[in-house]
Image (cartoon, rainbow, N blue to C red):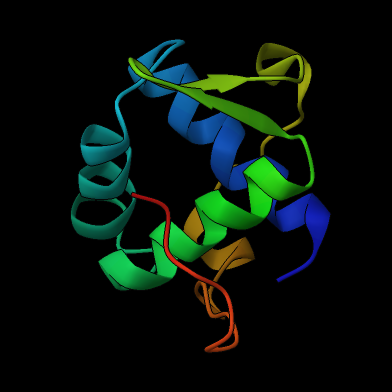
Length: 95
């Protein structure tokens, strides 16, 4: 998954759930409602987003560090991300 795909997923999340959003709510939305990947893979994606300063994490949840309302989302986001979220095993899921 490249950075553009991660931004699209995160933009979709923050548009639907607002800013900030709890980690549990983000994982539930992306894994079970949108079916972008397994919960552990979504948590790994969130870790990579924190590491790349796309989002920040605090005690209330995660916050967008980009203008998520300015990102251009494709009409069918699930088709654009049909590869799903997958990361190597050395990435620790966010807690």
